[in-house]
Image 1 (spheres, rainbow, N blue to C red):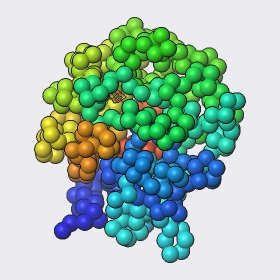
Image 2 (image 1 turned 180 degrees about the horizontal axis):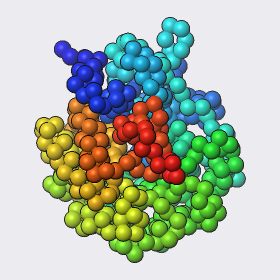
Image 3 (image 1 turned 180 degrees about the vertical axis):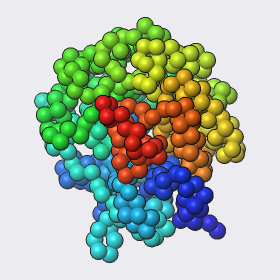
Image 4 (image 1 turned 135 degrees about the vertical axis):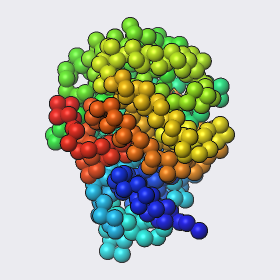
Length: 441
Ligand code: SF4
């Protein structure tokens, strides 16, 4: 029987155009990794930056099922190098799965390594605790809770609304655990602010600005659940926009401002831009019409797929096509019960969506689906999508970009294997290094 080592080596051989680093990274993102207790952090009191649970759980088990890893968090990310595949520096977001064939533990020489099927395949570096995490806000809240950073410190991730107003089976996206993740953190007694006050966000960013002496943080993302009625008396554009306005007034141009929101009408999108946001992510989630209707029932009901796409194109007139970067969740198109059953069909459909946007100068990007166990699709597809799908998607993405004369999108740090810091998908690891736009990198 083929083990995971056979699987990745087979794919590395069959798809030489995809860096081998990306093959391992995608497999870790779709299936998670296990941690020996000795590789866990001492939470916010140690030398290693802990997993912040910045929006979704991105774990393959619930907190109560994670054992020690729920008490002593795993690191936010790991960086892989060397080993038998001679890996270039590869930053990978941590998705915990105690049953994964990938395991982080100390080798006989005491050095931390990534083991696959019991064999060491990479040296593991852990993110150092950033100086700004050692400071707290005036009210005692931690910077990690209010303004965590990911992507090796590049991106400040501001989930200012920790729940989504698409609620329950008839509205929540079928792969999303934002609402469950909020409940489980509350149940565990962890601090997990539902709506982050603007002043707290500004205070946390002030601390980051002061102590990020290496200047690693280059961008922030404002995000959270969809607002279908009001939060703090505000509709979605004004709710998320008020943070952008306050940040840009206090720290003009210090970071590249991005917002992840629904595909909103033009006047709302214009307000984001007027507040100083430079990159807009109206995520279209999955391209296929039937799957969008089934797997994103709230988005279909409140906006509708065709209108969503029309608004994405319209927003390019406000932000410029290069700065509209809608996300999709790579892998859900193969999720049972309604997904494609062959990799060919799934790639064909997804590529059609890429072509639709890229031919108009808009560069979508994707995160690799993590089948979280409390979501409907995670329950029916605990193994996620086939690894071959993820590898062929990287190939299709590269080819579609090239065909349309596009280069790596702004606000994602440097592209190329060995350079990329984007941690929840390998798409940046697979792009040519020379395409980095210096002004926005
Ligand atoms: S819109 Fe969908 S993916 Fe986004 S937070 Fe709500 S349920 Fe989750």
